[in-house]
Length: 273
Image 1 (tube, rainbow, N blue to C red):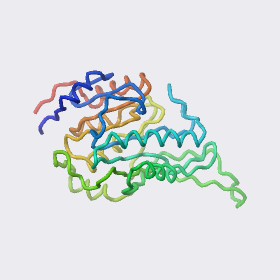
Image 2 (tube, rainbow, N blue to C red):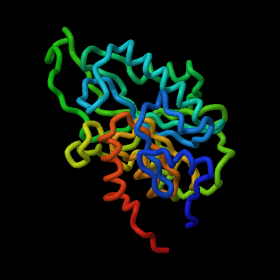
Image 3 (cartoon, rainbow, N blue to C red):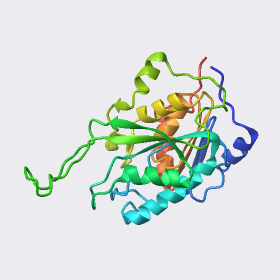
Image 4 (spheres, one colour):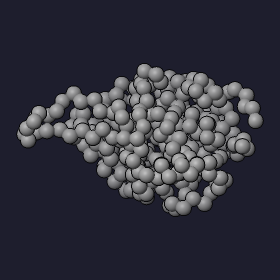
């Protein structure tokens, strides 16, 4: 397969990156203020933002009020809209709802905000993650007084900018017939990722961005993860011959992503064709 090549503008911006190699660039910074990513340059965004459930990240405060969390969400969704091409797409992994610190309809609220800032809605994939449910309370056990319902799933909201039909890019799809038939069923079942194995408090498995990338982008397309974390999206991008750009506000996580790219994606090893 032909090697993915960056444009001159991409190469120039990549030179200011925390890390860059071939088709991958990592930026240590805030997605709200970063200037190295050109507007209307991204084909597909795949990300899982902080859930605001008091996860202990190194830098990010994951315990804001819900209204502040939604306002932050509005800002970064608006920024990401400017970064994608007219036929750009967005796979947004978020929880269905939230019960820690009060019941909140996270999926409904964020989807509404996304549409308000200009994203168009395409569909929702239900991710049946086998190891997500960890009950610590049942509310009123075996009583109608105040029971709690916890759905052991997450969602991937599929959005787009202006046109759902993809017109830009190489036009080369690398998805198999079996993958296409399986993944266009909007119920995906596979396990989550181990925090201990990855060394990050909230990783998702490579399978999630792999499916999104192969289903919704062409070979050679530019994939962005504005909340890169441990670099899983970039691993999938590199393994599937896409250009991958990751942004994270935490320097240690940027280095973790580099380490994973080297060990799991073998990014700096010579390729044999």
